[in-house]
Length: 241
Image (cartoon, rainbow, N blue to C red):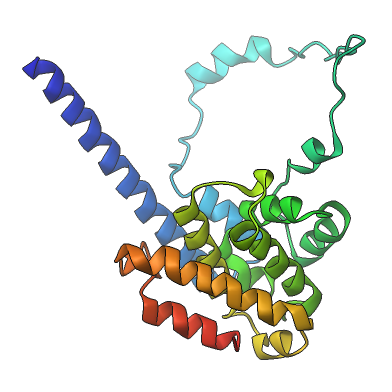
């Protein structure tokens, strides 16, 4: 009835306000981190804790309440042995669990050791804060890494496979945000100059996909990302394709 509609409306408004507040907090945290010139690991921590409030000092009452449990230790966890016939965890499943790198060395090590397939590369790239790439790659991006990123994006957008499937518009927008951030890296001109030959052709196909998918919606912006056809062509020009 009418009361139910009002409840639904209030819930919707509250959710929208909360999402808007969280977005503002995250943007403020990013700007604060950049102004403080923190490293990538600290940047991620500031952004992840943007919504948190300072913890008040522990009161004497709460300290007295928790004191009896100071020596409490959880029982040791004993992993159960899978029964016969139970499928073992595959390498793909293990490689799907990635964490944000603490620095460039951490990223490079994980990229080379664990990202063996395009699907693994995409999963790892997804855990990164693409807006923070200039902080992660302070000096420059290795052209070989760029080749791998482009190859994975090409697979996702131009040769979709089951492990890379998803919302087409969302994936194209994410790819545009990623490429835009990469184009702003230090010494990017050098990186793109020494990229492998096939990378140029794959980049052209990627930007074709992005242009058709993103700009055709008519939206000029996606948050802080300019998704107009003109902006997409500008980013494409930086990649010389």
